[in-house]
Length: 258
Ligand code: COA
Image (cartoon, rainbow, N blue to C red; front, side):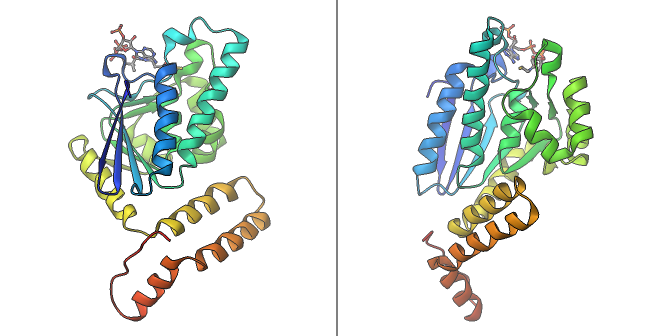
């Protein structure tokens, strides 16, 4: 990869968006590399949790690359949005937990990337927002859809229509991030969460994420039917046998991911 750093340590992968001179803005190459990295991580059974962060002190990701957007046409714009949405869907449906370690500005596509992750851990210095309105466009990588699902319609309207940036504390208060930590501790905290998740039974983790993400798009009764089916799959896993047996034998379970 040219614009990504991908490091594996045990069962945790750390993926760093690495174009700090452009505040890690998502140009076409970076989006394509992110797509390839997600496919690589999805199929790597040794990886059980992924941390996504940005290089440098200033930005997680400062959005789609405005220099590339500037020459867009309706046809290229639609393609751009669909491609970005597809890649962020791959992030959301990676099948293993992803933690956005938001080390600075997460704006536009950066906020949208963070929202596609399973968890959002923000440095106390981070800022989030959907400033597209001031460029004469709207969010195109899922922002108008994931933001109201996270923070509600009114707050999504506020952020998307005013384009204002929110500081980490406000992002926490409105439910846009999961937790705020001192900037110097961000990567350690992200890593500790990733390690904790990596020790969980991966099949049950995936099924839990599928139940929550899949159910959000469904009426309650259909969501509960989905839950029952996924519960049945979890019951069939080796890790379920190990987890219940370990509890009854008063020992720590050893999960194999089967
Ligand atoms: N696309 C392309 N380049 C970007 C970018 C983006 N989204 N965001 C920042 N950059 C570039 C700047 O053009 C600048 O490049 P240069 O040094 O070659 O001139 C470099 O990154 C540093 O950015 P700069 O604006 O000088 O930093 P700053 O600290 O003054 O401001 C921000 C930081 C995040 C407030 C500001 O860069 C910004 O508003 N970025 C755009 C955010 C946005 O609208 N995102 C949505 C895009 S759809």
